[in-house]
Structures are given as C-alpha cells and as structure tokens.
Length: 222
Image (cartoon, rainbow, N blue to C red; front, side, top):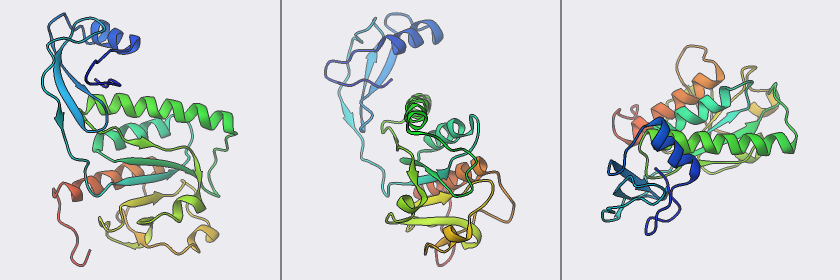
C-alpha cells in the first residue's frame, strides 16, 4: 500500500476502504507500506494509521530505466497497456499521438485520461508489490518522444530489442506514416507476427524487463 510519508503513514479513505471492505483485513493483520520511491516497511492494519511499524528498507532504483511509448488506441485499451506495463516493471509509460491515431483528444480529455492512467498504475503497482511507482506521462507528440535519448521504433525489419535502446515506440493499429518513418530512429522487431497495438506495447515491455532481469540473453551482437 502506498503512503505519502513512511515515518507517519496515513491511509487514504479509498485505501482504507479497499483494505477493510475488499481485502477484508482485520486489525493486526500484516501490511506492507511503500512511498513509491523505493522505500518500504512492514506494518499492521489499524484503521487509518497503521501500527507496529517495522524498519524502513530502501531499494535501489532499477537500471537502466525502461520505457514504452504507445500511440493512442480506442476504448479501454490504454488502461490495459498501463496496467500490464506496470505489472511487468516498466518505469516510464508515454502515450503519444501518431498521424494515424484514430483517437483525438482535447486538453480536457487528455488531462482526465492521465488521471485515470495514473490511478491504474498505482493500483497495478500495489498488486505487483512494486516499491517504485512508474511514471505515467502526459500525452505528447510523436516528434517529442522520438527525439528522446535511447528511443527506438518497433517496425518491420528491425533488429532485436536491447537495453542500449530502453525506450520503445509502438505505433497505432494503422501503422507508421511515411513521415514518421522518415524520422531517423533505430528500428526493433517484436517478431514475425502482426500484433495489435496494445499487444505490441505489452510484448515490448515484457522483453525489456526480461532483459534487465537477465531472464533472457540479448541476441548476439545486441
């Protein structure tokens, strides 16, 4: 459970309701608290103010920081992408607008969506017991995210994913436009199959985190 201050932790009304009514914790049941910035401590559920606080333990920020940028897709798919990337351990989630994106939002809708996505990320981080909250960024342009250090574009004919390129850009279901492909970026492949946009984003996140955790070996020369 995330709290603002580990020294004097207080549960929000929503978090207290979730623990008491959904998870059905009782006074004295064990609880793990985190500040979302790498530190955590054990505690016991006791109303809004957890009791029996254990020592604060600090965990190092994972390196390298991994990011997935995805073009806006319709419906609830962005929430799914944010949820699964958080569960996998991705550190930065960057939504962007591509030329062939079907979804077009004004600033009000973009701000509301960001709030929802950040809530989804927080809940997914608690479910997966992360001590570092991912950063879910505001909606940006393709040009802005393509200019970032370490960016690469998932595209046909690309090379293998590598930790040397820790920010993967995933295009819309309509594919990249000629203008977007003209931007000089390394290309990476997610396999021979044609994936839905949300599946591609999740697949990229899974490979990146597996590489960082040394669960898989980099391709020879990658």
